[in-house]
Length: 592
Image 1 (cartoon, rainbow, N blue to C red):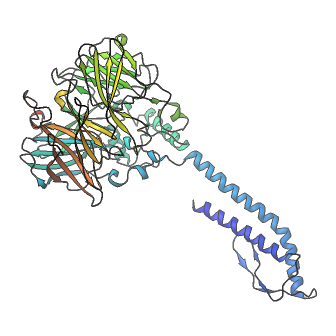
Image 2 (cartoon, rainbow, N blue to C red; image 1 turned 120 degrees about the horizontal axis):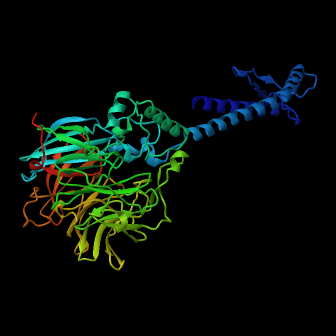
Image 3 (cartoon, helix red, strand yellow; image 1 turned 90 degrees about the vertical axis):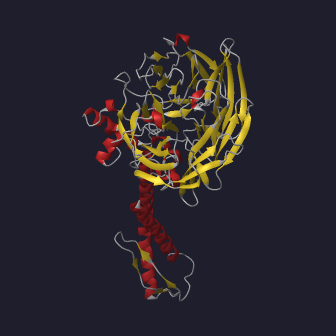
């Protein structure tokens, strides 16, 4: 960069020198007693001559000297002109090559723009007791709230999307009104390998390739695989998206890898036990949003692949034993499906206008997941216990892009109801100024009739419900609102039966939170008489003015979602994605 600027400066000096000498050689009468500076270009240094007195008398020896100098300048000027052109061409060629090899990054994948403010990474923190600065933590909140999010271990020179930071879990252990906070990286295979190397070695596939340097880094990674330095069978994901609890295990997930099992310590610390491959029955990846039927204890999941079959559906029994795959062969191209839903009899897959185009990577044109506005959205419905996709049915629903799903249930034998935010733009390209209107969609699986109802025109995302109602008809949902996901300015409670908003809370000027998580007052979920919204809504929030973070507990039944407790964090907690609350009785806490 410095050499380029220097070349441009020399070119400007050369051009300026030529103009000055041409002025001396003008055919107009030379003015009397004017001091003129003539500058000669020297590749090593610039030499400034002493003032020369000009006269109108032709026989003045000084005038003759100036005329002689002008004749020399006539011969010098063309060479200076061409040298300036060469230098300008050199600069143009340099910039062109740089832009071709390592072009400027789109703001959505520029680490210097993405991971700033409260998105910037933090270091791990050992268990630290936190003061309750407002109200009291309810004694019924006896367990752990744990939330996942991106926290890059190393910043690459190339592209890095928000969704590709290394996973870090932030937990707050609550017991008898006390709170202990800790945050730890999920020790994935990628994290450990790059930690040993001291720099990023895995290409950021979702972020995309934008020039020759990105493609070259990918070839280097492939070479590392070929020589045995990287074992892709050990995984290559980030475990940064969500946290789930099923089959007695607490896991961190992302859709590019298998789950990583987490162990909570008695003092509040978090340890990664390893990658869960389900007795080698699942090798590559699975969704970050598995669904557990709280009645049968079965867990349902899926995986997307760049190779056929592009979508595969499967489940686990109560003990975590994986059942047979159901390949969805009616999906004919690679797709990006982030979330899905279950009911008592069915699994529901929303296929959006986000499509996978691997050529974008190979040609250095950006992200492999692109937005195709010409594609007609559709929803696939398959029985939970189907043996093949012959039982899968697809229903076109133009204009419905559901990245996340709030819930789904069956309304009689023929209708399925799905509640989800409808994204109006490409969430992968930019999280700024998105608009996600919450919709309720009815699908008559017998007649094919589709009904749609907008429940809120606010920009809503990152929602939760009472977990006991997954796959069953429920009344209330809690969603974050804001212009930049996952930086949410408040929370809204929606009545799905009355189809309207019933409660709203803004966090205040300069304060933002994340996913509002509902936690039942009776977190064990064994009280059938308990009302659906009898509980709390919890979230980390951050004050961008003072740099302080808190964990807040809101009363889910109150008209204004009143704050019943606020816990001051020992330092800022970055914005993240999805979390959950696990009651102490459900956890296997290591007492060592």
